[in-house]
Picture (tube, rainbow, N blue to C red):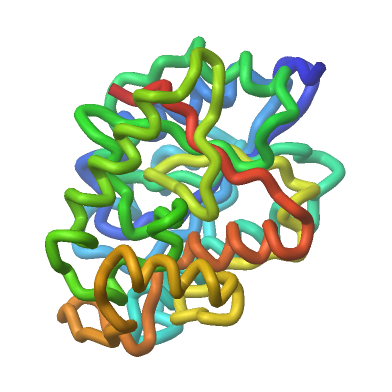
Length: 276
């Protein structure tokens, strides 16, 4: 049994144009941190067009636990590559301090996590060994379909035709149904899930990394074929404007798939809602 008040945790993530949400998100992080013996906040800041930087600098003065990296120039012209770089920066710190942080939390600092935090939900999961990465449901519905890989929707839904068999709401309704039908106390098995917030067992992710590129090599070919069958579509490399399908995919998919391939990591979703 793991008692949170006997261990330390690192809570981390990227910040870009998150100004309106930062006060509440940081307040929630403090509440999460209070569950542990101690905690660190590792933030990768990308140049923003709002007051994110001022808020972070002022907060750092009040909370010495903050490790803040200021990035002035994008590392790539592709959005997902930049986000992967940011998360990998935080991950590098965690790996360097792996003996100190048996668990870490990767989260977004936006509107998803600036809601009210149900603090009582987290501690009980540290007593369980049926997960290595654990994300949570959200209200009113599970929203992060891009990061999600769950059989038979095993790959990026953006890389298949957005038809009546594969569009956002089809997959959203599918995962919501699976979560509703779980027996009491069970977790939902998947290949990848983030949903804005996830807890990780550090030892299972030491040789994993985030990659915002399109990766066909880390998801079994039979799984990609199954997704193509259910989507009734071949692989598509569409330009969505903000996302270039030929060059980009959600960075979480590679992170989770590598951990499954290398360490048999258990990626799970809790039906409980952490922020509402």
